[in-house]
Image (cartoon, rainbow, N blue to C red; front, top):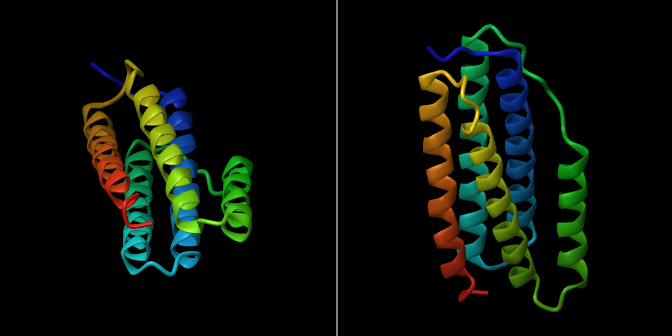
Length: 149
C-alpha cells in the first residue's frame, strides 16, 4: 500500500511553492500585455494555479503534514526576468509567451518527477496527474496564442 512519507510531503510542498510562483508569474504577464486574448489567457492560467495550490494544500493537510508558506527565490528571479523582457523586448507579448512555454514545460517535468515517487497515495497521484494534464493541455493553447502576438 502506498503511504504518505515526509519525503512526499516535501516534494508536494516544493510543487506548491512553484505553483504559487507560476500564479504570480501569470498575473504579472497579464498585467504586462495589452492584447485582450493574451491577458485573458494569462489571467485564466493565474486562476488555474491558484486553484491548483489550494488543492495541493488540502492534499498535504489531509495527510497531517505542514504546509510550507513562501515564495521561492527562483520564482522571484523568473518574474523579474519577465519584467525585464517586458521592458526591453521589441515584442513583449512574444517574449512573455516564450517564457510561459518554458515555465509550463518545466512544470510538467516537476509533476513527472513527483509522480515517479512510488509511495504516493492514490488520491495524491490522481490529483497530480489531473493537474499535469491540465498544464499539458495549456501548452497547446499557448502555442496557438503565439499567432496572436
